[in-house]
Length: 66
Image (cartoon, rainbow, N blue to C red; front, side, top):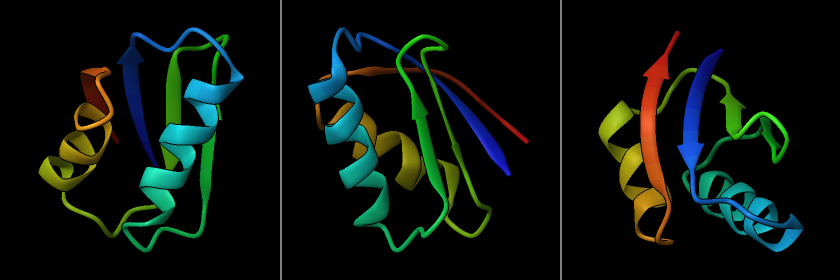
């Protein structure tokens, strides 16, 4: 699993948008947390693609680990 730290999410609509964008990359296991300002996803997609999908929505990716 990879953990993506995200800044800029403020509500459940933000969470839903990030979740949808990550699932559109072909990921099945996606868990986005507003409280934790992060997303946890399965391995299998390059970090730059994860970052791009999130930043295209207007959020910032602080760090990707795992």
